[in-house]
Length: 234
Image 1 (tube, one colour):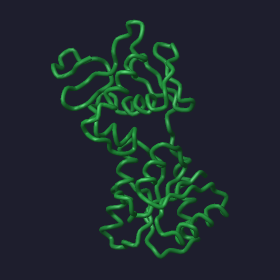
Image 2: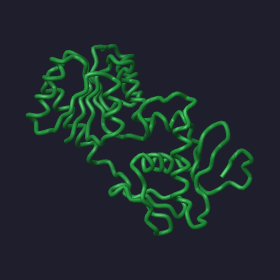
Image 3: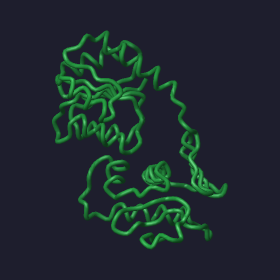
């Protein structure tokens, strides 16, 4: 498996990295929350091993929340010195798939990793996402509108995929900033509107009915236009 390890204690990080590597996994290590969130958001992983308490302004639960907000279902094993029942429950309810308290035996951690890998392999992930006549192929990251291929930049594809996964829901700008960019811009920035305009120009070519609508003062939604919605702009 391709594993991301986010752990600020260097000896612990090295111990885990060596154990996972010897078990046949590929491991990348981040030592703070900010870089950990960036790599978790912009790369594909089979497993994330995540320390609960991290430097860099973001702790493990912040990273978990950002991952789950963007529909990232990558299995996450939370490591923490906080061993109380309340903390374990909090870690699991925040999106963790398993919770292991420190200190721990390396063999137990590896066994939990193997269990998470088996569970992940049993999940049936759809190969296609569709809204109207728009189709996203999740395997190839290709997009088609009424059978016509649409070439998107990586960020445009991420933006569209998130919207389609939440079709017929209103998605706020803050949700998009966290889910697609992996961190927070100045809330006054127009980066989302610029990217959304480019995306619309590509998927609504040749007079195709617009799929993405702006919900004034809130965010965006994708789906069939609602004729009786006075708050939505094309």
